[in-house]
Amino acid sequence: MPLTSEDPFTGTWHCNLAKSKFSTPAPQSWTQYITASATDLSVREEISRAGRAPATVSVSAKFDGKDYPVHGSPAAEVIAYTRTVFEIVGTASRQGSVCLRETLTLSADHKTLAMSYAVFSGEKELLSGQAIFERAELVETQRETSGPRKE
Image (tube, rainbow, N blue to C red; front, side, top):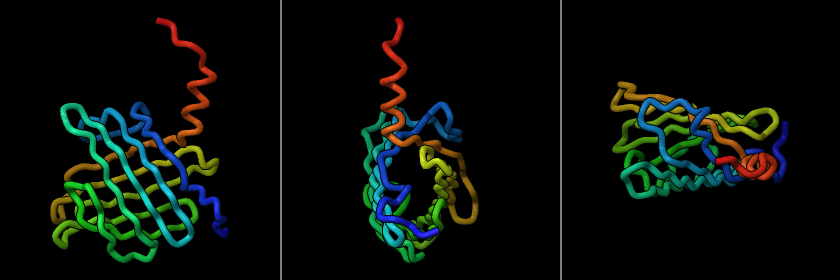
C-alpha cells in the first residue's frame, strides 16, 4: 500500500493515561507532534511529570536504520528508525549501547497510536510498557460533544 502525502502518522497525539500501561509512575501529560512521510520522520514530545520540569524531546530522522541525534533526552543520544505502512520501529542508543526499543503501531482507522517500549541497561530490560495515544482532533471532538461537566 503506497503512502500518500497525508501520512497517517502525521498529527498531534495525546496520551490517554487511563488506557496506557506504565511500569513507572505515569506522566501527568504526554503529547507527541509527528510529521511523517514515506522516507522521513520528525517527532517532538512534550512530557510533564510530577515534581519535575516539563521535558521536550525531539528528533528528525529518515527510515533507513541509521542513527540520528536525539535532542532533550536524558536517556538516548541517537535513534534509528524503520517503518512499514502502519508501524514505526525505533532503536535508541547511548554511548553505543541500546537503551530503548519502541514500536509505534497505528490503528486501522488512524485514530489511535500504540507505543510499546522497553528500556535497557546493557542486555538487561529494566522496564517496559505501552502508551496509548489518541489523535488530538478526536480528543477535542469528544470534549466538545460530552457537554458541560457536572460538579
